[in-house]
Length: 312
Length: 304
Image (cartoon, rainbow over all chains, first blue to last red; front, side, top):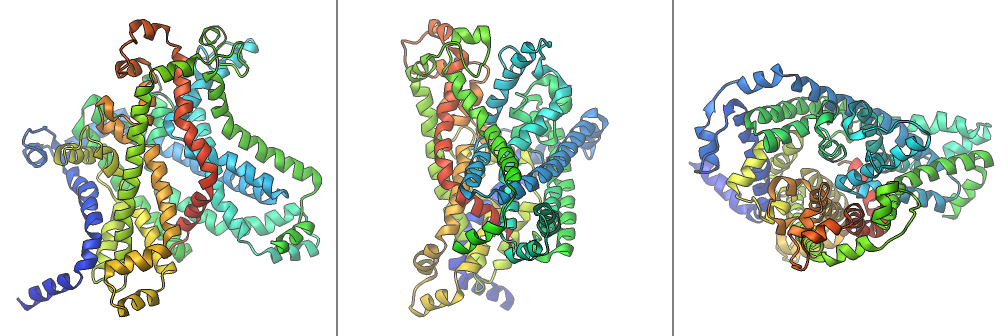
């Protein structure tokens, strides 16, 4: 009894602070924790009920692992997992190389004002939505009017129906992603390079090291920690795809699904177009669980490597 | 500053390499901007030559018809602009309020439950219920379908921003200041408003800009929750006209427009004009704000 009284006393003492966290806590409750609880419908055959949210969940019939069995018995599960993983791997590694190279180049350009101007240009794609980027790609890839087909035509080569031809899309998607992300990502590395002690370069210069020897032996080794950490953190998120890229840029073209469908788009289509609520919840839960394991693991490794950079 | 220029003098690339580096960086920067310029050019092209020539860098015939058309049906565009501006302003304010209060509370060592609430926020970064349960909660439990709040609330809070801001408070607001406020008899809210907020303005500004950009560019929530044409934000409107300009005409109050108008409408070029008009503000504004985004990115990389 005394303990309970003490508990309420403590609550009362912290009332102002509790009042401050209240709106945020409510938000997390409704937009994060209730949906977590809602994943039970992955194990149910979801029936929409007029009596509201709780009734819908409670009245739906338990089906155990059936939704998962269905999901993994189709080819879809394999395709979306493969696409999500392979695209993200390509994004992480090609993106890393290009961002670091760009950061080194920007840091070495002697006219600082020009370097700033270049950076502003490279930054632009980051500020545009995927819808806009979708229009941009369309102006290049449109089969009747696009710039690319005109170039092909002027060389006397047959034009290509880009939006119906899956074999080009892995390259297109990787290019578009890099176009949007590399300028922004290079900022992190540029900041790290700017933080390197200049006297190291002076010493190297006195020893007669060329500029490229300096880059190889000073800049790159000193960037290694941040490269490792950024990469590990990205690997922690490898099971999540950028919905906008895979939905807007291919213009939701059905013939391209084999190479553009990722877990996120699959879940969305299950919800909004095919109406397979149970199965797409199952796919979402599969993503969350594997994603959770990956974040924990990658963070564990980051922690071993450099405690300060770990997420927790 | 003078020290750096002096170092630069003997720490320079050879002339040839400087040119090569400049060309690589310059080329990439140009490629980043080029698609936007191309879309601008298309929007000023005459629709009739478009059918014959396709999208060209230098059109055979220039024309303002697309813009004239867009302004004739301007009410649809303005409606979407209005929705986006409302959602962006209200969303950013709501989001800053919730985030800054939460982050402040969990940054105070005197708050008994700080660990619990830190974890309560943090855990959502590791695990989430996924799209379908969220959709069901928002539409069935909260009943936000076709409500402007469906565009605001789902994006209002982000545990990552709370973590960044918490770090910011602990590093840039010394405990001594809070204590001095207490000695002067100020309550927690007063301390927060009068002492802590002014000191943490740079951190708040960064979060506000990220949030503004997020709301301005959002189309996903509209895709999920909005059917009513009156609540379609800018980005989502652009999505809806992707396949047909019909959306513009259906929702225009201008009754002099008819099916005839739809047929004579310069479809492709006015679509691109819409894209230009929707992107314009961002393109002009971001160079002034980009240093805050850079700051935010490098702050985010440095943790407690």
